[in-house]
Length: 289
Ligand SMILES: Nc1ncnc2c1ncn2[C@@H]1O[C@H](COP(=O)(O)OP(=O)(O)O)[C@@H](O)[C@H]1O
Ligand SMILES: [Mg+2]
Image (cartoon, rainbow, N blue to C red; front, top):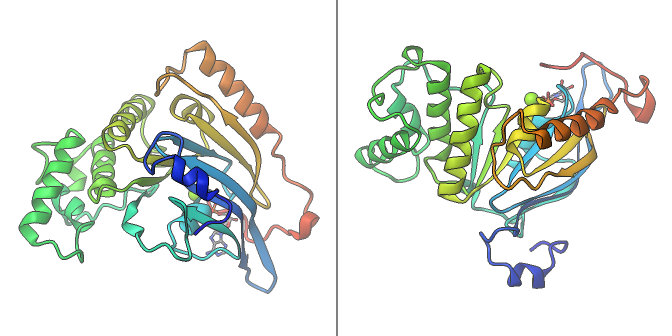
């Protein structure tokens, strides 16, 4: 059990209640070995917490380690240091990984599988029969507004519809925590706003918490209740904002959003790169997009 999340607090706040910590990171650090020797320090001492039911944005420029951090949280790669508590349980002891859903930046739909079979894929190896898998996938497609498109192939769907299929696939196991890695960055502005509304609706329906990675200041401002801002080289937390909106997603034209965008831009604008070699870091190989 986690030491940091106080046991009494955990008892007094039922799991799943608004405000309970779903996910807490304490001093998470990561370096990768680089070709030719040496290490690239990608994340340094990342601490943040995400509350149950919250949409929490992780905002940072390309290359500041956002995807790496999601990979670590999802147990796909190990951290070098630090601790992660998931629903109050140290991730080292955590076993219920199905609790966590993951939506990648590229939708990763298999082109040779229909929409329903792409969604059903997430249910394989779980001891559920074929027919039941398809039934659950059909239900989830209906929930994201894609009834009637079960048998469409990905190349027959618009960008927004593909996004909905990917969302359905990441939700079909009913995760309590959803990690999203710039999931809507390839959509046009109008479709992206539609997907924001869709995400909020599904969050309300399932009561899950969402950790949403983006490099887009406005997206963070309209969608998130709280925003953690990362700076690059090494990736570290430089600011955290409590937006406390009464209702999300907000309109981009809302004066409060305009003000929040300004504040977030200022925080992000301060994240200039230190000179090469500072903090033991020397840029190698450039950043991946
Ligand atoms: N497996 C890896 N091996 C070496 N370097 C990596 C690896 N994964 C990511 N990186 C490097 O870590 C840095 C952060 O990458 P990433 O987490 O993808 O950033 P972001 O998602 O914020 O754009 C980049 O410089 C990238 O090249
Ligand atoms: Mg990334």
